[in-house]
Length: 307
Image 1 (cartoon, one colour):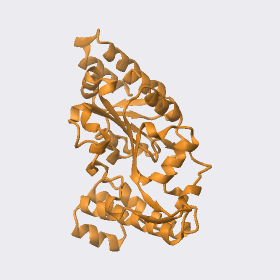
Image 2: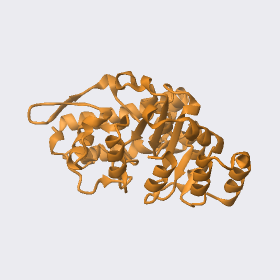
Image 3: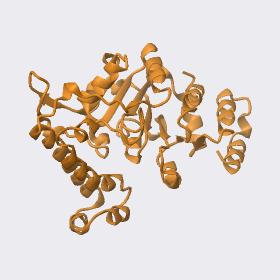
Image 4: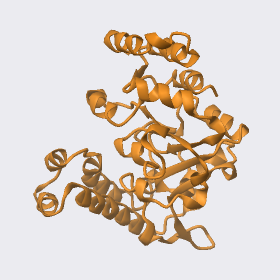
């Protein structure tokens, strides 16, 4: 946190110098690892929320696992159909990263520009992202990829994430993992890591497997992308019984996962900066707390939330 932000925070809360939460947050702000974009909102949330009344919502790829460029469809990229899928991945991934219409235009080729000029930004993004995943999933079916054999030797929990997730489980805190990747891989990953995934909900794309674990289909009507997470029906996961939500993500759209189910002031958005420091100001518009250093976030989140 820069010196100007710390001064602004102190001026905001001079009237409440005995507030323990304010003192705790002020201490954290002295670290260069944490950026708070809206002091008053964060303070209000921390003063009002109760852990047992809070839903924890996590993105998976880039947030819970590392390295950040590995994702939960990477097994298909390394399978027999990997070359074709990788070309499609490179073709559409930049479009998925676009954060507004003009940015999308700079990332598109001439053919795609015709489409996005005809559609608005949100329609174009929804179309591209769904098409990209349908192509990847269709290739998995065509090449008879075996979902049960997926292992990623170069994939692991981000530093401290296993401990953090286990702490939430031990305290019976309601948790959902929402991913635009593949449920089968995520489930296998938690199993290999010794995490009991029956204690929380994994919401992701489902494949249909034959008796040998080979992919033969997927649910085309409910394809999850990073862009449409906020439109998912979370009712079956009991979130309507919660008053607060804490969302962890590494991309803008992760800040909107459960936004339609909670009031703005009752959602705390936490972002992990992976590599794009140039867009820090952009992400400050969507996330309340930003962690810059991937190694020290656990102690600071634990102090911030009192877990």
